[in-house]
Length: 101
Image (cartoon, rainbow, N blue to C red; front, side, top):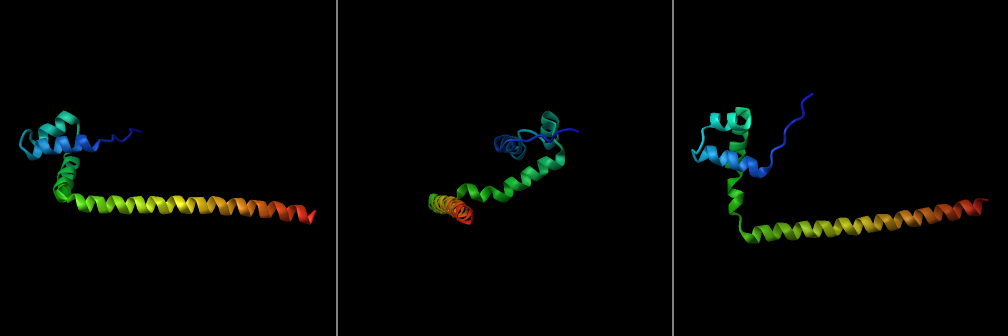
């Protein structure tokens, strides 16, 4: 069974931009890189669809980064609480086992 190839975002952008700028035709790019035309079409559609994200303001990006940092702190705190609860549960379990004997 043949493994699926994985392409980096940089490679996808390079090949797609070459086609969109007219440096190469879709057929040339597909033959050169061994791609299926449907795959290249999907990449082109995705690039065009998400092009507006390139022009997001720094304020929007910083808000997203702040939200990510907040969620990471929350995940860390919850992990610590879970570990503490596990330790308490284990010590209570051990204490109950000793008292039953």
